[in-house]
Length: 201
View 1 (spheres, rainbow, N blue to C red):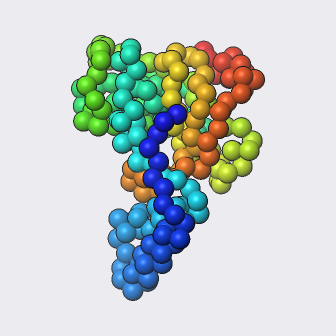
View 2: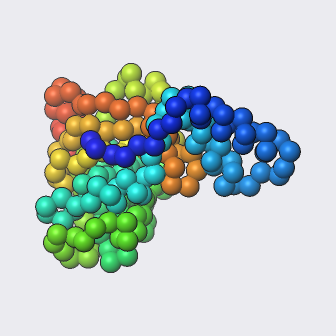
């Protein structure tokens, strides 16, 4: 998956961490400064970071007019997408306005259409497509401190059908649109065969 990732030499990131922490110790911090600090701290730990809406928008559209990339909470089984005139919406549940809060699967991502290039073809504005969210294997799952519900998966959709895709990223939100890349992997044929049967419906 070709996604622009923000990287920085560790020494440079550590210097920025020092500068921001020193300032924050002496002044009342605001949300933006704390968010920037979180980004530099992630880079200092060796994690790349991504601007999630920018990454999804820059990836653009597949030939069939649906997004190349998808995003969902990491503990979800499937994800839906609807393209409106104002935004591209990724969500869990039968409708993006009313996700299933009872099952604690409530999550939605809205990416402004202004971040996307021109769409190759249009669909009914109420049309919704669904696909399988990649499974997180044990080696990557161990990195999800506190459980998968606090993380999201970004992946390139092979097909907007109930079939599994191959190469996801596990992300953790830092602040605003900024996410740290926690893990990257390719699903094996065994993993794809299992979730094709258990997550499709």
